[in-house]
Amino acid sequence: PRPGEVDVRDFLGRALRALISFIAAVAIVGLLLVAMYRYIVAPAQAAGSSPSAQQEQPTQPAGLKELVIRVLLSLRGDDLLPVTSDPDAPSVSFEVYPGETATDVGTRLANAGLIRDSSAFRLLMQHYGLDSRIQAGLFQLSPAMDSEAIAQALLHAGGNDTILVTLEGWRAEQIAQAVSQAFDDGERFQELVLTAKAPLVPEWVGQPAGVSGLEGLLFPDTYRLASDATADEVLATMLANFETRFSAEDRARAEEIGLTPYQVVTLASIVEREAVLTEERPQIAAVFLNRLKADMLLQADPTVQYALGWQEGTERWWKVPLLAKDLTDTVSPYNTYLSPGLPPTPICNPGLSSIEAVLWPADSPYLYFVARGDGSHVFSTTFDEHLRNVEEYQGG
Image 1 (tube, rainbow, N blue to C red):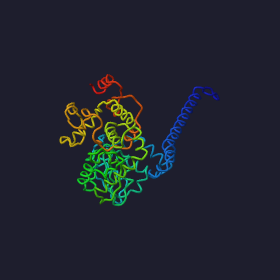
Image 2: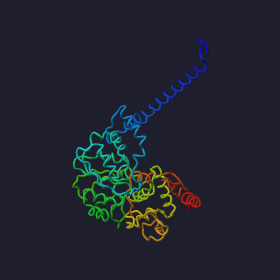
Image 3: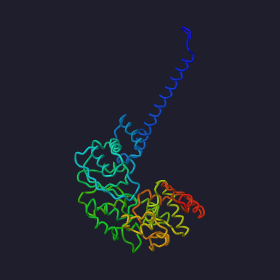
Image 4: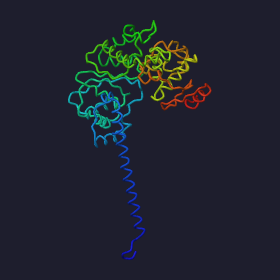
């Protein structure tokens, strides 16, 4: 261009670059606002709606640092997942010593195979404010727990107490193993839970006459107990927790749908072992309830696994995979491929979500479901549909 004249192309190019920069800046600010709402405002609103929830949650630092920590945690989600997807992975004794830092604890948790990544776990500890107030204690933890659950367990530490974590879906013997590691009284505990009758089992539970044992009533939870607690004391704590969690409203609902609390827990124990995704539990419960109403066999694989018991070859309580002959040749009242109705007792100790799924099942006509292989299931109403789903998702 001549002196004093404006190069139109240069002007437009600069204007376009400025516009792109402006749009990028707006986008970044928008993302920050979304992140602030998602990770600070929304959680605060949710916590504020429930006084009890505020009491249960750990203290969390506020401000820009916390926002950064939350964003980093969202990017490290895979590093916070359980080390194993095996829900029956045995618990491990882990002790936090006086004076240990979050870095020390995270490193040792990773070395013990309880978490995937120590740096991601330290971020989680900072998020909960645990990095500055770690207390000594003995813990029973499982690699099937995610980092969130382990961090929550660490919140219960205090002095010489022992923290016992039992997982949803464990059978009594698995819980007894964890008790044995923590208190050296596992044999007594197992003897009690396999043979106990009234008065340990409250009358309202509706345990049938002639049935003994406490399978299903050992509520899965994080328990803080004295380091010298006896098997009887551990058991009493678990049973008291079950009575609290299976509320009077739950008992009324069980009567409303025509089941005793014991029957609810028995069916919930099957749902617990069948379901992977929490949102599918009401649907799975509905399938079994529909089958019971139609006088159909439940045909639930976990009941056969329970009947087969301890597997010497794999040193597991739950046989995986089951063979066709296991379903047809296992003669036991727990084999729901051969025996009608519910099994005699629960087959594991279900969590609250499975109990609620039975009490409030989905409203659906489904009678069958097949695992897709990714944790989810596909449901069907007719046997022909079911066979097509088996062919598609399990290769026949």
